[in-house]
Length: 309
Length: 107
Image (cartoon, rainbow over all chains, first blue to last red; front, side, top):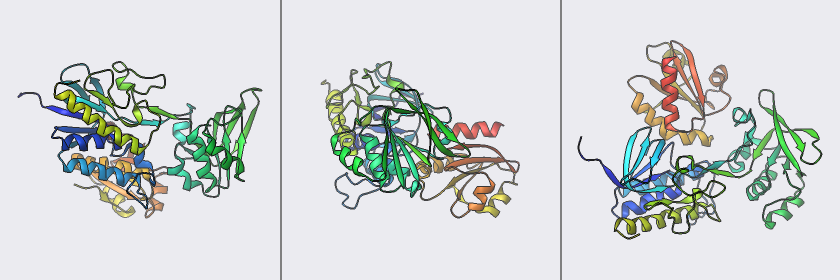
């Protein structure tokens, strides 16, 4: 065996934050590798059209944008491996990443592992995913054209999903466990005025009813405990996101929702380890804020590699 | 080698052969299918000597998809000795596909 091959930077996660870090790192002359478990883009890859990423005046689909970000980073020399990271040691020098495709070593690590939709936690939920249960109105909404759908949640993403679905579905029923939306005010008026949107306040979904596919949901009133059955063709679960931080939780400081604690510098509590994109504590999770993080992380990593802090 | 597009007749003939056949049931409008496609092509490269790695577009082969009981896509089915040995719906990583293939081959 020769000497260990040590990358200057390994990026975990090939979404927009990850591939922007890879682009900036490769252009800065750093030996850079991206570890991605499936394909470029992360959550963005399932977004049919992105209209708020500047420079694409007609919009662009998330999968294509992701592929182009990957190709751009690779053009400058960044490498990609389709690997699932199984264990990390971020406190050693070099840092060690054990994956399904072998062990990799790096001087700096950028965590761009993103987030996934939070689930209700009902027993038949995953079996019904794609057969009536969905997590992304922008992705799956068109399948419910002219049908009745339930949206679960009361935050911004639930409100936005209900608005979007009200333009596609025949009827939208928003189920929320409180008596008012948590979503910002801009959503309230349009939702209340939409003729085909109904509300079931103080209610939680306790059961997903199915025959071959979803046929409805069972609701429980959180005050009275009374149960009702609500027939529907689809249920969109919009109760927030879950950051992918299981592998880092013993080594990195996380906030109470599981996001990696890092400010605008993307620096974590460990030297040479940076958190970018949706996985980081931040006020706005968008493609543009993720790519911004990616560039910042490389700037900080260059300082670190040069012997600064 | 790239994954081979197949129709019903080709698949029925292929699964009678010596090599196990892995099939990705997909459709062009399916975002999750698109997302597994790059990893599936990698699978086709890596397993080319042991498996026939194929794809079936369910829009073009609706009858075949129905006959095979495919209701959700993407679904991967591994056929051995002329019959389906196992299936997996929407694998979340290339590692999950590797594991599925290895376990299905051992069955």
